[in-house]
Image (tube, rainbow, N blue to C red; front, side):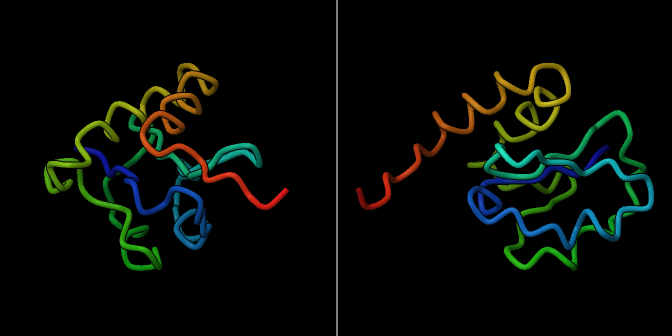
Length: 99
């Protein structure tokens, strides 16, 4: 089991969850639209769940069915960050700002 960051983190990227992670497995670069949990480093402690202000973090088996693709997206980020960024854009394209 691992924890997974889901859709409500997109374009919010509050780092309160990363601040409490005892193994520093939650990351997100400036160019990322969300944070990601490394499934190979997560120790399943759940410390990240309560600090998340948008309820984006779930144990993998409790992830809402409509967010199922986020399990693979979180893992993909640690293999190919650019591919994960593209997938996040496919899931929910950015809304263009005012010109």
